[in-house]
Amino acid sequence: MSRGDRKIDIAVLASGSGTNLEAIARAIDDGEVPARIALVLSDNPDAFALERARKRGIPTRVVLLSDYPDRSSYDRAIVAALEEAGVDLVVLAGYMKLAGPEFVRAFKGRIMNIHPALLPSFPGTQGVRDTLEHGVKVSGVTVHFVDEGLDTGPIIVQEAVPVEEGDDEETLHNRIHQAEYRQYPRAVRLFAEGRLEIDGRKVRVIPGSTEERG
Ligand code: GRF
Image (cartoon, rainbow, N blue to C red; front, top):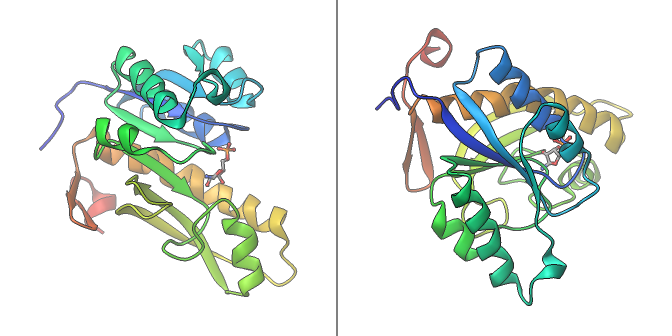
């Protein structure tokens, strides 16, 4: 099941700050994830994620929706850029666009997303706000494979984060971020080691280390 000793090539798609990109890049530098970031792609030319990538010497690309006549040709341009970079895995990290059907089909089972809530609760772009408004006591982080729905794909890893009395969107999201920086590199590592098996809605994690054996 292993992908062998080869490091996988990944692309990170980000629209904003890119702190998850940074966490994954650090985990790679520390030898925790057998991968190489071949491309950082953004739909936002001002995304700080691009700046982080440039500082690390990672190739970057901006693909603007406004440069394409429709959503489908935009998605084809994204797929072409990812194929040109030869990536094995696409990591959505604060990418603010829904992956269209052609994109999902081209990289079936090879696109991951991170969401700042325990899915299937609170999908969508306002996950942290919706969590607080609902009054739940436990939130968390979900890394999942991407299908054609909004945050509906098979779940890879989750970590619970308590909601504390007096939390606002910023304090809760900050705590959730800390869990994200643990779980996203972990999920990418499991993929890179060939230890994720998708079976319908379920993702089986093949044991391979003390941590995953429990
Ligand atoms: C994260 O909280 C992630 O869960 C959500 O968008 C945020 C991105 O943050 N999808 P960053 O750009 O990685 O700092």
